[in-house]
Structure formats: structure tokens, C-alpha cells
Amino acid sequence: MRRTVLGSSGPEVGVVGLGCMGMSWAYDELGRDDMASVEVIHRAVELGCTLIDTADMYGPFTNERLVGRALRGRRDEVVLATKGGLVVDDPKSYASHRDGRPEHLRSACEASLRRLDVDHVDLYQLHRVDPEVPVEESWGAMADLVREGKVRAIGLSEASVEDIRRAQAVHPVASVQSELSLWSRDTIESGVLEFCRAQGIALIAFSPLGRGFLSGRISSTDDLPKSDGRHRLPRFQSEALAANLAIVDRLRQVAERLKASPAQVALGWVLAQGENVVVIPGTKNLRYLEENAGAAGVTLDENALAALEDVPTAVGTRY
Image (cartoon, rainbow, N blue to C red; front, side, top):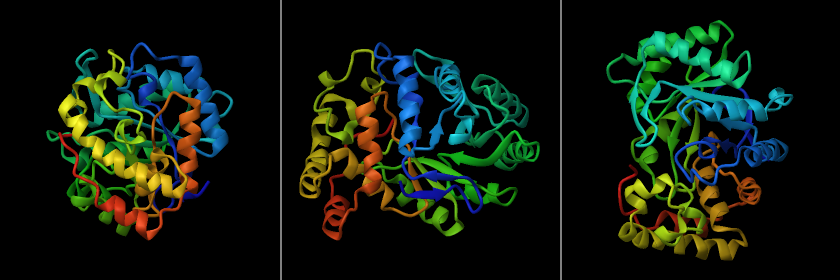
């Protein structure tokens, strides 16, 4: 698998990683299977999907424990990433608040290390910038964790160009995690992708398959389990979902010509946005994992890229 580096001197990773959130949080609650998820994580490592991404809020806390169990005896084979700074208030409604206070980030990181059963993580990310705390204060606390050896590199999630610039003045930013897909291009339109490219910062694209929609396996709300958290998202409401199928139709047309799957083409489009881009599609399914990993070998020609640039704008907001 093609590889890239997180930041100017960070760890090297496969350009397709694995997002572990859905194994414990937000999606089909009744379809979770920890043993199957451990198997998926092991297979991801074998396929070169070496960036394994989690967060303390997923569960909350249970996803880090799951990832920690899966990586026992295999810690040195992966680049382990987690996040702090977003605190769950009510797991049932997914209500949360931001906490970027230095004391919180320190205690959150130390708790993550215990749950993951490791002495350091390779990438620690500020899950959201706290508007009540200057980003320099949050970032300074995370930089201290690097100096103490608890963290190898630090990154931001869902940050603006100004946030990134201010953090960079305190300590090198290895990565910025942001939603980027054919139906979520805010990262491009806001200038974040261009800024990261110019600064040698990795862009870690989460939800690169539009929370599974761009795989082409969801054609109506009936295709989602009743316990699935996507039922609350605007783009998955019946009328919006029906309109958004036009995006999938274009993906299918391109995929058929390239002899690839819609998911591989969707991931290929994100990867085509720059050599600094890494995608972290999430899955609990071995077949889908292998399909996603195969996207690293799909080359989109000029005709394919032109067809995808012209897809309809998604109906509905992200959240």
C-alpha cells in the first residue's frame, strides 16, 4: 500500500487507515460484535492499514478498551491515534461539550493510555477546539505530553486555518483530521486542505464514504438498522436521502468504467486531493475492510476526476 508521513517528521502510515468509532459508537448498536471488530483490526494491520484511529468519547471509553485489546502483542505494527477534548454528556442523545483546558487534556490523555494499555500513543488529537480556551493553551498542554514521551505527535480535528496557524506557532502540527468526501467538501472550500498541503501537515479524512452512504449500499432509510444513529442525521432523512442517490449514481457510472466499486472510487477521489491525505473509513466487516484497502490501488483518470467534480451538492447539513 502507498504510504505517507504524518507531518514533516511524524510516523509513516498507509494512506488507507481504519476508523474504529463505529465498532462502539454512533452506528448500529445491536450489530456490534467486539470479537469480529478485533478480527477486523488485525486484518487491517495485515493489509497495511496501519493508522488505527479511536477517541475517548467513543462509547464513551469502550472503543479505546476494544482497540487496546486488539493491539496486544501488535502495538509496534501500528500508528495508534486517539483524541481528547470532547466530553459526552448523554450517550443516548450523543450530547457532548468541548473541554480544551490543559488540566483536562492531560488527565484525558493519561486515562486513554490506561484504557489502551500502552505507554504512549503515536498521535494525540484535540477532538474539537474549545472556544472558551485559547488554542495556544490547549496546544501547549499537548506539546508537554510530547516532551514527556506520552505522545509522539499531536494533531487537531475539525479546526480552521486560523486555529491551525495559531497551534503551529506553539508546536508542530502533525495532522488535521476533518470530514472530507464527495458530499462533504468544506475542508477544501475553507482552505484547510490547501493550508495543510503547503505546511506539510497530513490531512486525515474521516467519514470519506459519507458515513457509508457513498458505498452505494444504502438506498433508503429502511436499509439502516432501527438502532442506527444515522437516522438522526439530516442527509439520511427520507427526502434528502432520495435526492442524494444522484451522487451514488455518478459514482456507479465511474466505478463501472474503472472496474472498481463505488466505495473504492469515493475513497480514491479523496486520496487524489493530495499526497498528504490519509483516509480512515470505518467498518466492522472484513469484506468491506478489504474493499476499502483496495482503494489505494485505484487510479482515477482525468475523465473520472472530471465526472466526480461535477456531482450534485448533497442535500441536508452534516449534523
